[in-house]
Image (cartoon, rainbow, N blue to C red; front, side, top):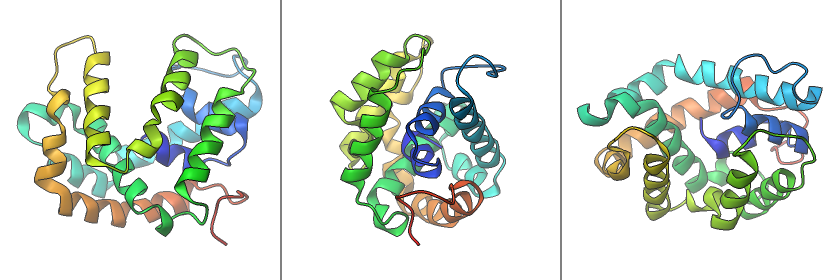
Length: 197
């Protein structure tokens, strides 16, 4: 899963959001490196990723990715699933996307936990460029792929990965609609001000 899905599934506290965000930037054991609530957020993110990566529907989505990009299929599907989440937001959350995203940016931007480089810069850039709301549009997803492509050290075909969305829009959307309710049932925190009752 990508940023938006992880933020929706966590318990919405600033510490949990930070932990779920940090999980992509820290490896190995995290106990003692961060406050306990942040550590639990990291663990929550890792459990959700394990569930996702081994899920048959996610695997079916990965298999739709064309040969030259197949190596990056997991990254591509993570981003595309956030597109389908953003464009169908009201199905999964009773709080509007704009309000939810504003809370995410506020929580991440005001943390007082020592975090590794480059996390502060990424948080600032994410809010300034409004990554989470940009997932609603195809142009926003295209920019996301280009940004990821530039970040990777080795040469890669992600700068044109929007072609995978254009080529497989309907089946990928259907996969997401089958898959994401299972993620929510398994990982969404039970006590969250954003959850539907």
